Image 1 (cartoon, rainbow, N blue to C red):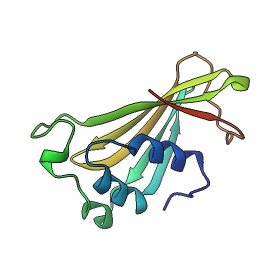
Image 2 (image 1 turned 90 degrees about the vertical axis):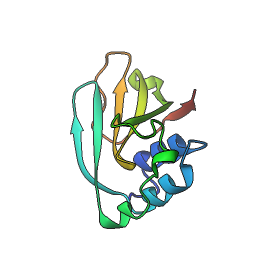
Image 3 (image 1 turned 60 degrees about the vertical axis):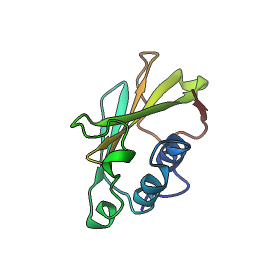
Image 4 (image 1 turned 180 degrees about the vertical axis):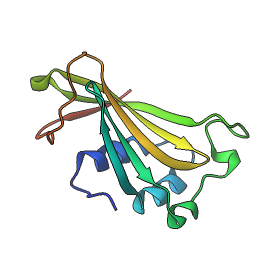
Length: 126
């Protein structure tokens, strides 16, 4: 499970709020396991391990953002802000085959995304 005190927890939690299929996605979130972090310079990708427990809560076709399509869904309704670090980042939660797959964060200012934990930040829905 993802540490409830972490930035990653906050990013996913707020991204899911009010989204189509929220209840099943939250069930997946409760059993989500972080597999890998990949920093790109201007951002970071958080990849999740797909487990049998998570598969129990797979979104049904009718509940997906693109029903009956092979197109992965992306929830992009959140911005991560830290003015001291020149950070204004889009947060994109990727859902593939009805399962939370990975979270992408990329800094729109062009500055490097920090590898160290953020001590303070603001999350803004749009």
